[in-house]
Amino acid sequence: MTETKFDLRRLWPLSRRGVVGPSEHLDVDPGDEDMSSDLESSPAWNDRGAEELGATEEAALSAPAQKLPLANLEARQISAWFGDRKVLHKVDLEMKAGEITALIGPSGCGKSTFLRILNRMHEMVPSASLAGEVLLDGVDIYDPSRRLTEARRQIGMVFQKPNPFPAMSIYDNVIAGLRLTGTPATRDEKDQLVEETLTKAGLWKEVRDRLRQPGGGLSGGQQQRLCIARSLAVRPRVLLMDEPCSALDPTSTRVIEETMLELAQEVTIVIVTHNMQQAQRVSDQCAFFLASQGTPGVIVEHGLTEQVFTFPNDPRTSDYVNGRFG
Ligand SMILES: Nc1ncnc2c1ncn2[C@@H]1O[C@H](COP(=O)(O)OP(=O)(O)O)[C@@H](O)[C@H]1O
Ligand SMILES: [Mg+2]
Image (tube, rainbow, N blue to C red; front, side):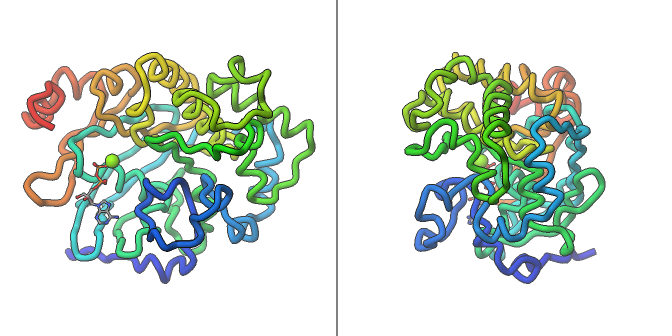
């Protein structure tokens, strides 16, 4: 059976304006003026996003104490293309509620593309298309009746290179998502949210006395934790992390790993990592991606991390996890 590609631009004609994250990770058109300022290159929102936000999201955002049940994320038969080039082929993966799923595999096998499909960032690349479904608690995030902004709020992303707004204060960085959506919050609610999310991100004790200082003044590891706090402030149900520690020293890496293990109790986490020890330390489930000789990326094997590392079913998995290639 042939696969039906979505016409992503018809599905969401403004998708390229749904600006998310730093330009170097998004392959956006360098001439795209939307990327020019700090605010517009923000984690999940733009002006349009603010208009699109409905009452439900506002309620969720302005209720700092609210706890949502853990979410299940499921990719079904996901294929992806850049132009005519197919880079992922019929990927199925369930990312279970409350667990950490690690995506491993050599460079270029489609891990980042897969992650970006999980929160509708893939469609920001002009030539991109995809087929398949992404179900958040059983509801397809690509359903035309669903809002793009809703998917991006529920499914947050942390990138390889920490991308706080450098000139903005630590405090304002954390609440940037609220500011950009125009979500009303009292001073007390903001204070509470800043403390709560910085605590969850494992950064509160280090920055509580300098919340008004610029985010750009923090160390790399602290900046990454600030970005985690910023993602958490809009109360995502899933947190996607694309090699979040690969630019960090071992100590910072360890702190982020501890943070992830704590966060897994309230958000479902999917992490791409090239560090096999890290995958084993933090993940419950592991999926091994591979694109052999110009063919699109597939999942060769997935299952419990311990099993994938100790008794892999496929010899290619064994070779990869034992460092024989990639
Ligand atoms: N914006 C893009 N335009 C065209 N091809 C791309 C783009 N981004 C990634 N690719 C290609 O898609 C494939 C998968 O890339 P990627 O998802 O980044 O892999 P990984 O994260 O596993 O290293 C690679 O062959 C890469 O060159
Ligand atoms: Mg990548």
